[in-house]
Image 1 (spheres, rainbow, N blue to C red):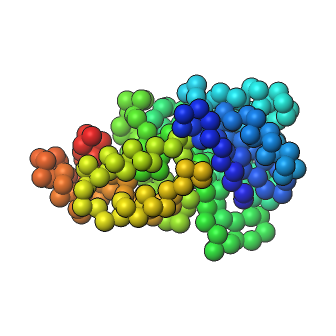
Image 2: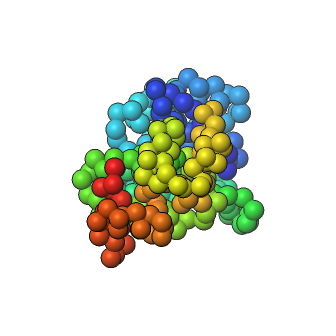
Length: 244
């Protein structure tokens, strides 16, 4: 599976996933750049989808549909479908409520109908559920749903490449440093940051992202030093969500 990333607005990130000259666009705000990519790579855009319904993520959707004749994959149908076929490959759809009630993530595992490639990483288009270095605001108000969503993503292979809906990397690591100033992985994470192609691995996130580190011993000690409850995993997650 090929992943192309496009910046638009102040910090939004759009994506085109392609396989066997078929493509799907996700959060397609960068309409002009996406059309150029499709033309240069001789890709047929077969579908357009959104990670959630916030205006900055659905912008460009109708323009791209009109320009290409692609099919719109609506949120409700995607929750029920769970699998999107693209050429010989598949995209797994995860319903990840938390940031919004309708938040979705799209995971491309490293296999096709014909073979499993153990050397290739999978890709996660995570929208505003999981950013590189942080997570989205819980606008849904449902912290327990967000907890379950993050847990469902944390079990993916550690080499999974995270492609988020925004580039908040520098601010996110600054915030992570304010919480965990002694974290030895923060500088290395920033050194790998490339604003022209923003991504990280799930393993990277488990080392630096405070919201994925609620079981890390150093983080548990920090929460306890602040008088926060850490008896259960849910209490540790809730404590992390209130550290900021």
